[in-house]
Length: 425
Image (cartoon, rainbow, N blue to C red; front, side):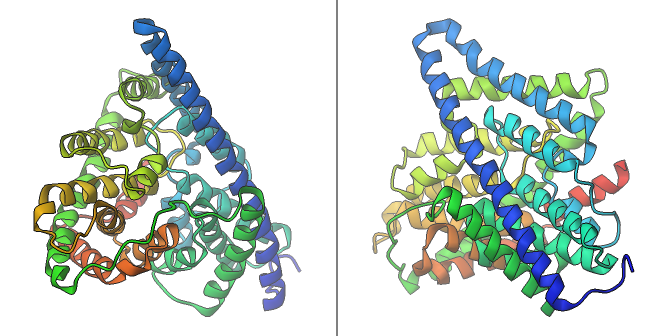
């Protein structure tokens, strides 16, 4: 009978097959974004050769991409933003899984917005698309409502595995952030879905880490108190970032004289201006993070400028109302913050701890403060960088960052976004 409970073996088989589809869709999304980034770089090179008139090219590109992405999200409202808050709401029984029509809206809208240079991450749309694929697979195979929810949640984790090449981090993400519980069927279903999804994505994209970096040396144990202090400062930075994300969304909601699409175009124009000044000031931040971890670190004053601009431009890009996530910009911001702190305090590091090590720790610590999921942050960053030698500093800094943000009364960003979504629905 439709909706009747199915066997566990059938559930895992559906999860594995749906994971393959998540890998193909998510891998295609990543490939398209990489091609868009290359095209954007060529356009910026062309604009520099055109002199003063060349400034119009990146401005027009980002404004058009943001406007089109917002227009698509207006037709399918749940396509706007990250989508992780929607996945969490479905698990809590606050919403029903989204229909399949969300998939092309998220794919195309996210490609237009992120491809044009907005400071957004690919992981939110990929997680949301994975969840939609999982729920649709459960409905098509006539699974029970609880099993559809399990597939929806576990395949969302598979989407994160594809976005960041982090299958183990996807399991921790599902348990720590989305469901805040550990259930054997949920864990096993996420494992098999993430395994097949990652395998299919690697078949398309190759097996390479998101951030290739030389293995950093293990910092001295004597620096552990320093990493605790660094984590506490990062926690305060994350609390401020969360408030800025929510405050920017509220401010844009209050601007009623300008339509959402025109507002998105204006935000895109600002981002395009940043692109024209320096490509590192815009975009999701993957290339920026890769260069910092690879040792290509600017002087302290330039790092501070990047940090301030991206701290403001990230929430502004999210307020454009296009598909796009928060993880990648936060990771890039954390890498900048870590490199900046190391640059300011370098004379005190007698053991030669470099900027790359602090950039890695900063990525995980800021993620922990913003999302309030420290284990997920640590596992994701270690899988993305391979920096297992930094586990002890990562543990210390993420502990301090999470505790500090919590003591400051900062609400985890996806809790805030989920409550905002419930009020607006």
